[in-house]
Length: 330
Image 1: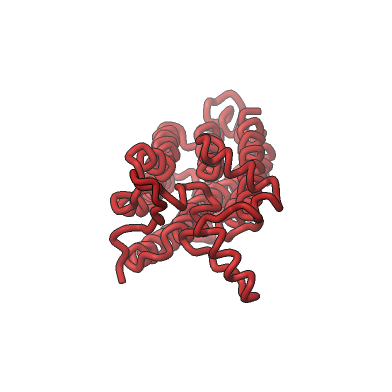
Image 2: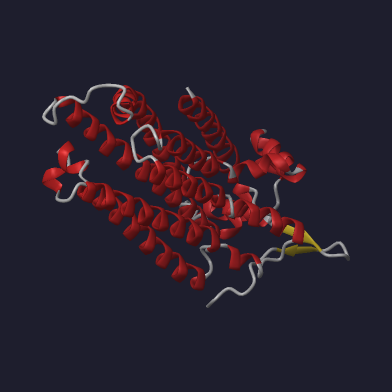
């Protein structure tokens, strides 16, 4: 019940995320596709958890000597191990698709900085590599890949020791990539011409992954104390749903500030916005539209669409000051 409740919350917040994006940008970007993938994978994961719960409950009763264990060749064990593999793979896919959502979001936001792009590619390479290491290691939990559905091998002392060690480095790779994804955009904030309060808000948005990292650590601790399907179900459910929820939150900043709400309402008014908006982002759109060229999501356009900052600031003397990011590498 908890998993499906949290999944429903994640779906509703994701729907709001997509609505805000379309209302503010009149289109979707690749980070929206990545987030949609994470939502679909989350639904599949919730279904797999629901299907596997009776098997995990029986494994728990067998481990507590409350039920006689069936023979090792019983199909029950094969089905249980299949479900465990499916759930493990889906957990990784959900978590890493959320990381991809943030990485694409940052790429669109800071695309003008060559220095940032170099660091961004390094973060992408690390994230991509750790994902496939985690995926590959799930097939060797019981030793060789041929023993993946051999319950006798998977429950041997050596296999259990290896599984515990695997849980630890899974946690290390997941948390380390979360930290990289969170830290990546923070150094760009220093050079932005924003009020300190705005920088704090953006830093908070970029640091939301800390919540997922903390839950992953708690899940790993529970896994090491239990190690069964049911022992980690609660924390795994929390981790993946919180990850998807966190992935949907950055765009909600448009509803928090009065400036964002006014901009969102003006965009929803359609033609009135097109006729009255004189911001640099709007001017850029009109220029490309007059040339019949596709609009590249530049920093000014994309930031204005996402409401991550004002595209125009005002000097004390009342004159407009365009918003360029500082310290941009050439």
